[in-house]
Length: 243
Image (cartoon, rainbow, N blue to C red):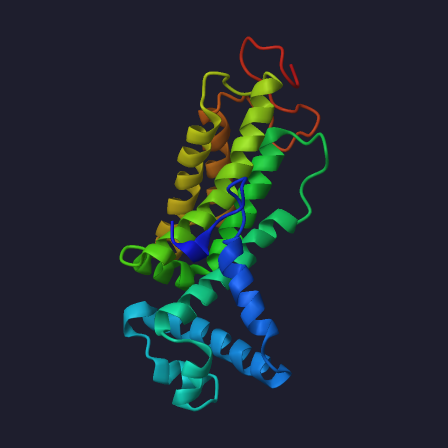
């Protein structure tokens, strides 16, 4: 793993070492320098989203930030470094899912999974152009590839914990490996969003979220009463929650 892309011990969240480096860098700047650097990051996000990574030019980033071309190099040694910071911003944006108010305690698995899928779909939509560029750059830049994996782990680890809880409660198939199941189901939702927002397939949000949620729960062996917080989910021939 590259030195500046360590992740949290639980495997979730943004790349904390990379983020610490950014925070230290920003803290060392004057207020004016901080504003200029922030403007460059914002401009870089616009240019990368519009042009992709390969076609993005430093001159265009500087112009969008209303600074001289040479000013870019005062804050970033290369286009790659600017892109990595843009992706850290995307990670923070996507990780706001964790901070969103979840369904009430005792909600059925359907409500919890539906909530998670809806929030992810909407976050992906907001960041679709940059997510497309991230997928592109991750194929040839090891540090960006690690950032992509870090973003994915945020959701895999959270989902694996939920699956383990449902297994212990007798709700989900106890023979499933929680990590493998979380990876498989997370990939389903992630690639669905990629096909929708990057490749351009036309889907209805309500139907998409309902279908993803239904497939999610059925894959785990969870019988569900849609939108019923009283049912709590159940498995056939099981005395788990809601049985």
